[in-house]
Image 1 (spheres, rainbow, N blue to C red):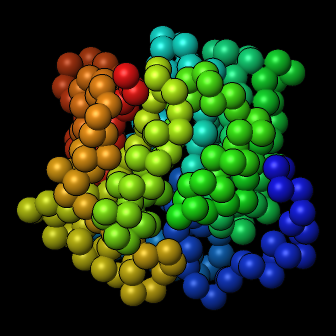
Image 2: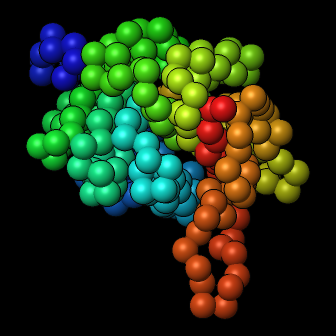
Length: 273
């Protein structure tokens, strides 16, 4: 790992098993094993309030796979900066990218101590490629960029991956400024891949689930409108179909030709001109 100084004892001391954590609850919903009873209880209550939450988790994960497949296979991207990685599961960014391009280089970043504790699962790589992990916080993009530059070449295109992470930045102006700082640091031909929970009329159960989560869990989640999510891509060239529900970003064709049901988790992929 890039910092190389965090001991297992220090990591364990940072893990609070008395408060539900979003990364562990997400892991629970995706069928993982790296969660505690407090996360399961909170996750089950969120599902009771909003039963469709499992569809969000699965749709976001599937979007990651489709986006990385497109960027590696069709756009020729060979470098990925995946911020807000979450707990390792199947079809991580490096697995998808290196299956197509064995020389792909991936840097994962997260500040959750339980993710750090399991980061070794993210550090497998093909002999031709590289994976690395940074213990860093999205609120400090300069530190992320400084450390990532030890593994990634910022004179060549980089895909900046921000899946389900910007929603944990409370102030919207600051969130947009952080995303802009990251995009400004990468060259022309780079990409921004972003997903974010939304709020909109008719999503009362979603709003209620978020309100419950924010009353018991950490970090706090901040919904934004589809228009606010679209603003993260200002100045970039959005790929079709634009900013849409994660389930509807280039989904696998269905026999009847129908689009999947929408989820209140929006996403987009855009190229830096």
